[in-house]
Amino acid sequence: MREKNEKVQAIDIKKLSLSDKFTLSVATLCGVGYTPLMPGTAACIVAVAVFWVFKDQAMFAVFTGIAILLSFMFCTRAEQVYGQKDCKRIVVDDFSGMCLALIFMPRDITIVFIGFWLFRGFDMLKISPADRVERLPGARGIVGDDLVAGLYANVLLQLLKFAFKITS
Image 1 (spheres, rainbow, N blue to C red):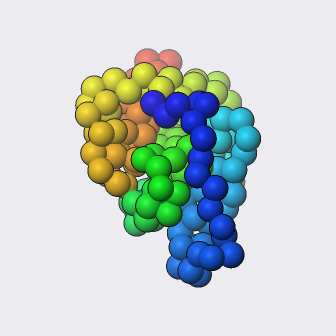
Image 2: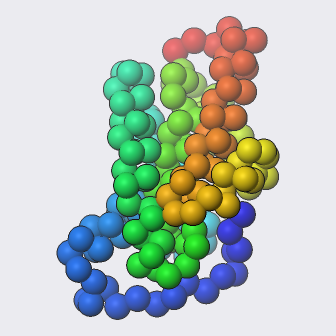
């Protein structure tokens, strides 16, 4: 888990290339990563909001796949620009993991609430293999542990959905 009190290296945005500016825009989820307190949680709240916008579950699944792909494409470079392993400003991984947790879930406030807390809990606990995945270099480590947490949360939610016969 990332240190909450870690200092993030200051970067001069004006000196960055257009490509690096775009990379940071994606990695910070258009600036959500600059939220002063709990930027990862803020990114998860954005993911929940996006989930509510999509009425079609298949389209949300496609959107989630694209978000995951973008996470892998941009997180390694963002980490290099910030000069810090798994910089707390990089939150597109949290966003993607939260989206994964909600794939094929009904639009039920209780399920979404439980899913949010399950994902955040699994993301913080780093239950194996997430702990090992997190140590991988670059995007594989940055994004991978969040995908494991999202998968764990989704599986538990699917079981709850089945056990309590919750439908859309």
